[in-house]
Amino acid sequence: MKIDRHQIPIRDIIENYRDHAEEGVFGYGGQLNIRPPYQREFVYKDKQRDAVIDTIFKGFPLNVFYWVVNEDGTYELLDGQQRTVSLCQYAAGDFSVLLNGNRKGFDNLTTDEREKFLDYELMVYFCQGTDSEKLDWFRIINIAGEKLTDQELLNAVYTGPWLTHAKSIFSKTGGAAYGLGDKYLTGAPIRQHYLETALKWISDGKIEHYMATHQHDQNANKLWTYFRNVLNWVEDCFVGYRTEMKGIAWGPLYDQYGKDPVDTAALETEINDLMADDEVKSKKGIYPYVLTRDEKHLSLRQFDKAARRGAFTRQKARCANGKKCKTPGNTHGQMTFELSKMDADHIVPWSNGGKTTPDNCQMLCIACNRSKGDL
Image (cartoon, rainbow, N blue to C red; front, side, top):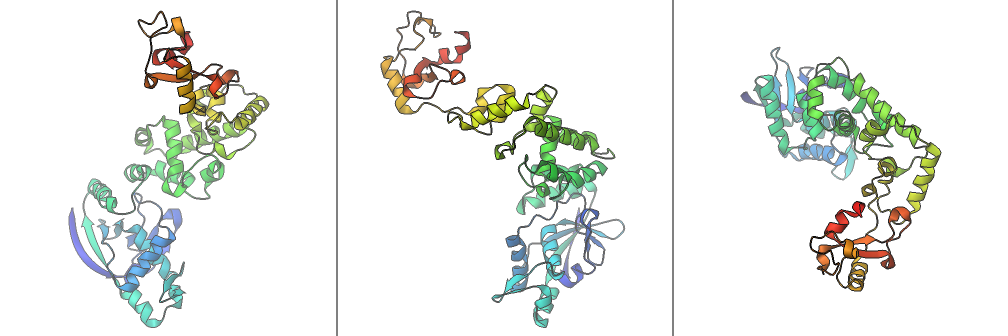
């Protein structure tokens, strides 16, 4: 890749700055594409954005910028989008910063303050190379900046009409996916968390393979339809919304149980009972539990050290299964174990109403606890 250094004043960068949202962001007299397809959305927080402007007014150097020189003589911003958008937005009057003890927008600056801002020179490297060289360089130089999420990196590689359409649905705060899934998904659309979740669900975790397969599809309708089907099924099955429903991997549950008939009233009653059960530590796990019946989702209360020690002492270090013990050589049931080699167990199982209390605790050897279903 060929690289040349240039000093470019801010007044040239902001010339004809235009933010057309999904259609792109441009500056430098329309010659600079500030947000080419492999770039993310603007993700700086106010503090980071203000720090860029503060750095400029103090005359301190900003980190270098990298622009790609296109064949037609225009440019794409390879690195420095967040800083470039920050200074362009400030010049456009989109926000103010604290300057000499007062908050000032661009229009509030004195003449000398304004000239100082506009004359500030950015150190820009012009880069010329192939597409693969650009993307490889993009990955490397972004390690030092606002770290890309895994999904943002994949977006940088698998650009095309499919990704453009998918981002228009899943990557906008206030967008279609956000409106439907805000109650059920965690993360921020702008950091590609919604797109990543939808892809993880539909691809069984094989996101990169899915994106490679569909990169040149005309649109992302298949993904969007699947996402809607999943969340519509959730809303149909679980008639009462609770905050514990946010962040659950609904896609795999829909794949496995989406076609099963559901008694929604009975389901809601059971969920209410489980929410009130202080033996259940993971309230979020109630939802996968009522579908799968796997108690691991509930993180049931465990016996404490005192209860374990008490049962161990009562049993004189022997397995509670006596002559039915599964440990080889213990058919007489008199073999003793170390406390650390035994597991606490409910005498009356939680599923039959047993509680995690000392009088319901027994100690089993590891072999017996692992084969409880065979006893």
